[in-house]
Length: 71
Image (tube, rainbow, N blue to C red; front, side):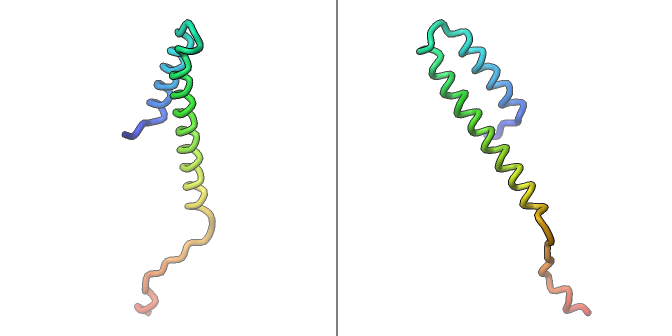
């Protein structure tokens, strides 16, 4: 399942609201764990996407088709 950044923001807000609405820390713990996992996954995805963008623009590209045969 693919989530957009807006989907992730909505889920984070819902988890934070659930954490604040719990009367005890023990009841809030599962929500905190899921929120932590979600944030870690989102950060990893963002870092991966930015690394991919950098690696795509890191220097000279060579075209290895055999167009030299046409000369």
